[in-house]
Image (cartoon, rainbow, N blue to C red):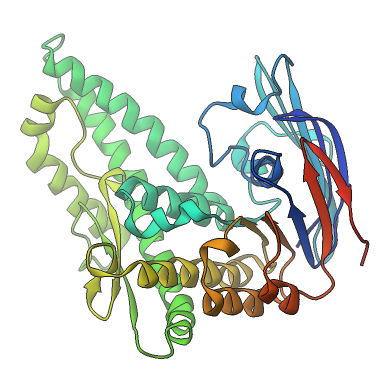
Length: 374
C-alpha cells in the first residue's frame, strides 16, 4: 500500500499544498514549528478520520478559514483509490472514490498507517487509556467489525453511564432500562474482549523475535491483557457473556452509588513484561524504548498478514530519540518493505547510510520544497 499523492487545502498552516511521493522513503527536514508534524498528522487523519494530537476537528482547520480538505490517492496491489476528508462547522465528510460514506467505519481501512513518534513511549509507560486507544486504533484499521463494535460499545456505555447517574441522583428508581442497557453492553463488549485477546496474541508472536533481536537475545517480551472481566477460561462467546454478566451483577450496587460502569473493555489494561517484570515499572528507559520499537515494527508485519497489504509508516521526529543501535534496527527493518515518511531537523549519519535513495523535502514556514527526485 502506498500514498501516491497528498493535497491539503486550509489544513493547519498549509493553505494550498500538493505533493507527490516516492514509493520508498520520503524525508521532511526542517526546524521545529515549521509544519513537519502537521504534514504527517494530515496523512494520519486521512487514514483514520481523526487526529492523534487533538480531539477537536476545529483545530485542523487553518486559522481564520471556515473549512479544510485533505485528499490523497492510495495505491494498492490491484487498485488505486482517491480519498478525501472535508472539515467544516457542519462536521466532516469522508469520500472514497468520490462517493460520500455514510459511516466512518466504511471509510477507515482504505489507507492503513502506523505512526511512531516520541510520545509513543507513553504506550509502554503511560496510562491504561493510552494502551486501550492503541489497541482500538490499530486493530480497527485491520478489522471493520471490531471498529464497528467499539463504536457501538462507546454509544451504549455513554447511555448506560447517564442512566446510572440518574439512579445515583434518585431521579428514577426503575432499573428495567438498566437491564436492557446491560444486556446490550454485554453482547458487544464480549465480542470486543475476544477480538482484543486474539489481536494481542498475534501481536505478541510478531513482536517477540523483533524484541529479542534488538536486545541481542538478552530479553524476552510478553504481552498481558488484564481485563476487568475474568474471561480467560471461557471457551466460547456465550461463556464470555455469562462471565461479563456475572461481573456486572456483582458491581450493580456500587455502580449506582458511583454513577458509572465499573467493568468492561473500557476498564481493561495491557501490560508489557520483559524477563517477567512490568517494563513500565521496573524497566530502564532503554528497555521501554526497545519495547515500543518492537511493538511498532511488529505491527507492520501483522497488518500485512491481516489485510494483505503493508501499511504506510509515519516516523515523526523519532530517529533523534533512538540510539545508534535502535536506529539501525528500525531502518533495516523497513528497508524495501514499506513506504515511509520521516520528519527530522536533520538526517543522522546512520540514516544517510541506510536509507536508499530517499525523496527529500525541506519544510520552512509551511512551504515545502523538493531537494531531489530520486
